Image (tube, rainbow, N blue to C red; front, side, top):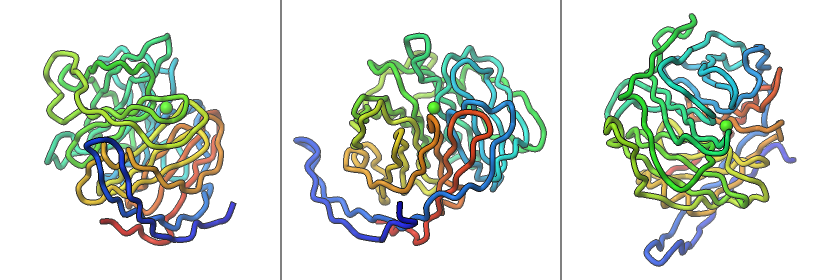
Length: 301
Ligand SMILES: [Ca+2]
């Protein structure tokens, strides 16, 4: 694979439904191929299932294990060293499949971690999201109790998802898996929290990627909210969302493939906090942590 993808501008005229006709200007950024920046050697981290980058603590990332593990979030450095562990109490989790970092609420200066209990282990998805305020001290192990107001239960017909993303207004997006990659995107608005009831999904769209596997397996909205990455088993896709931040519409347009080095059961992807690149991490022991860097800043808008 070439080390870089040359920069090109595509103008795409798109029809995505009877009431969805738009013209999308798409920038294909130049991105370096993945560099191994460290090895995640902690014996605690054996099935990395999601990845998120702290913005309050630049250089630190969060990851967690897949189904069958304790409710723990691991803080790792950008060279893969496990710095500390956050243990969650107050939840009965089933299959934690992804983690995202974003504001705790619309307009909040504090960031929260959003953990999706959305996988289908045991035959059905819980379709729950847990919200945890980002700790101020990541150097030491901590325990956080997840209160009922920080649990969001939702109901929809999709039963297997591995992607959770949060936008700058604290709206959540869950994407289900599909055999051709064209999973359903659900929006959970920031107002959905605290109702005490299981929330119905009202706004949906269909992801536009091409895959021969059950995809997607992860994703992340950039800190500015202007860019999205979606991870399929064999590919990484990119969208320039532009200032409107209309994720449901934009993700119905074809994504642009970016460099990706195949990992064993790779499900974990996140933007770097400076939005200059993205990290990926595969499942298994002693996995390399990859960083892909934008060699030219994508033009937004
Ligand atoms: Ca996962």
